[in-house]
Image 1 (cartoon, rainbow, N blue to C red):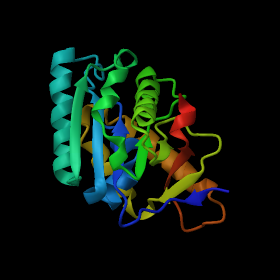
Image 2: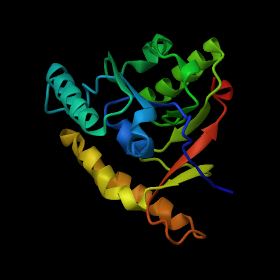
Image 3: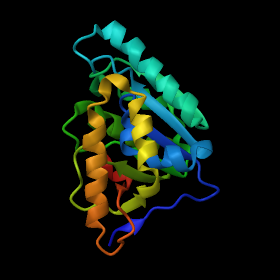
Image 4: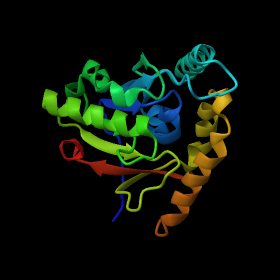
Length: 212
């Protein structure tokens, strides 16, 4: 049975984003509810995200949009690793820059995503956790593709407009807003026993040592 995921006062949280905007598309709840306990790591520069711009121009735009979002959110820490978009499968060393022993909860992109950068980001982080003998609770977040059997959810009904606001910082990716919030709406409707939940983020709790 799906459980409600709650943040504790002593939690220290890492959100892993393959691209700038994945952090608010899939793991908005951590950014919104406990920003002062949350570190955000963006692994790629998002430079291939707009075919109307050169890769160099788009990298600058995506960094500026992410920085504006972080100025608004005010997380504990925001780290931009800056690897070229679409190249993460060739840069598994990127996650070695993250000390996973610091964290009690880690939010990761889906290891079975059709997007190669998402798969690589999850796998490289799980490999780093193994090397470091780190043991945080790990939750896979949804971006576009829903899981068949999520294990946890967070009610974002009262903050869905705030989620839209964070997504809107990423102006050249704005087309994604409605599809993401539609997924959150679907997830709310699927929680049949919780009629007050109209929008929800869902997650899959995993053992990182089983991923790779």
